[in-house]
Amino acid sequence: MTSDEALLRERYGRRRTRRTWVPFAVVTAVVGLGWLAWTAIYHGTPEVSSEMVTWSSGDGRTAEARVSVQRRGADVEAECLLRAQSEDHSIVGETTFTVGPGGRENDVYAVAIRTERPATAVVLVGCRTDDQPIRR
Image (cartoon, rainbow, N blue to C red; front, side):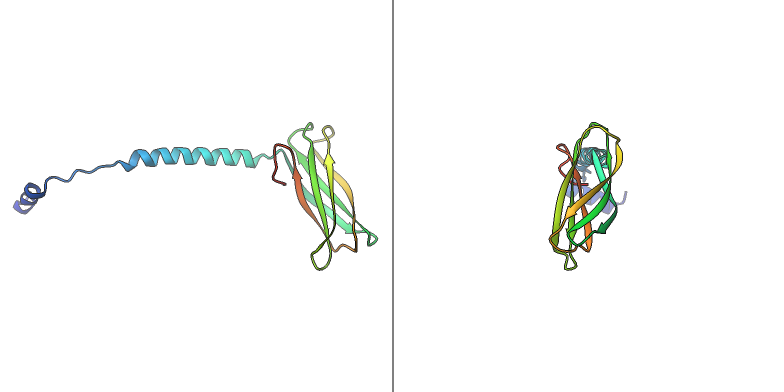
């Protein structure tokens, strides 16, 4: 140690290194990773999910859709929402259908939608359950 360093330590004292942020960082990391794991597990395995297989615009007053619904178990009851849209993207028909308990976990359903004018698209908004309010 040089005399300048000794003089500075004598004058200002020795600097103590504090690492008070380390416990805070560890707690934050543990809580954050726990939340991330819970979110991935909860949202990665929904009770019900659905996707559009095909659709067709019927006679101008109806549109038909085939929807694939995947449920976590055969006892899960789900409600699905379909919307028919016209060329200007306005909603011209809407219907909900219920997939009751029983049956297969993965199945395809044919649904007819009454429309007020010809539909140019059918949109599957999604399916939900009482425990899963977000439609998938």
